[in-house]
Image (tube, rainbow, N blue to C red; front, side, top):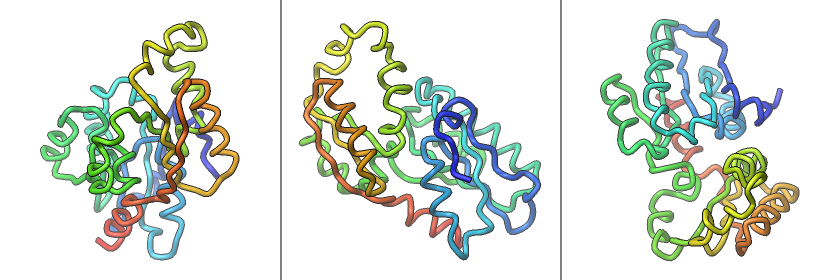
Length: 218
């Protein structure tokens, strides 16, 4: 069953605790990555990977991400998982997530945020100066534009704040994980609502795919 993004935003996605045990690996991830991770793990050779997503809404309070991840790591150990991998970039935690991962003895996916590992961290860094004025969307954010951007920033109630929030941006760059015309249309419409130019860049799953392949192979 395909996960519902609104439910993920509010509640996270719980993996099958009953499956925990020797040989199984738990992926602790952001709810914004659930669809992509489920697609990448639903292939032969990855059936030992379980997924638990924390709410994507934690991005509104990134200071809460590290301890939420720590709590899930400890819960997974108590459930008997043989391995744990954190599928969060730094995500605005200012290095605090790395500190938690080091203290708990687990690894996380490389990168400052999901835009970087979708686009490829080296390529993203190389374009950083040229794209200083870019506001990025992913498939998840295109789907959830109203909830997380428009209503999330209060623009539905105070549209006059749009130029205050986005006055320093010059474009929306949609990093597309899939070839989906409807999502592209949503992303383009979101850019128009923000008064910004629109650019689409197909990335696929980027380094997320390579990372989960390595985790699956141990």
